[in-house]
Length: 95
Image (cartoon, rainbow, N blue to C red; front, side):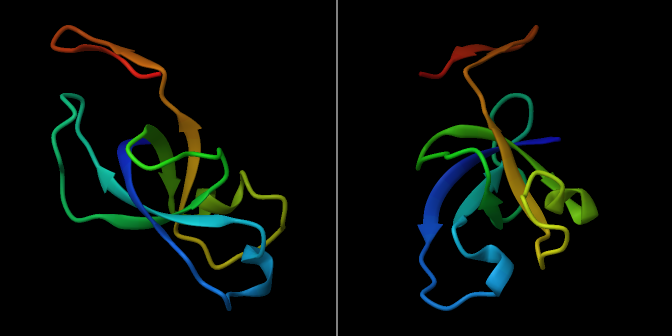
């Protein structure tokens, strides 16, 4: 799993059949200090995340696992909304 922040929503009136009912979100990857890492990606939202929330996401073939379909053209899925982070360098609460 990877850490990220939802920075926007993508609206698509036409999309692949297995993606109907799923929101697509822009996600900014983050490191453990909540600093931006790399370019934003698009992820299918299976957790109901909103803009600005810190989330966990999965990529590659594992991205289809949290969906209720056997196969879908998905490279990344949001699987959790982070409530808090406790580490040596960072203690943050999100809610």
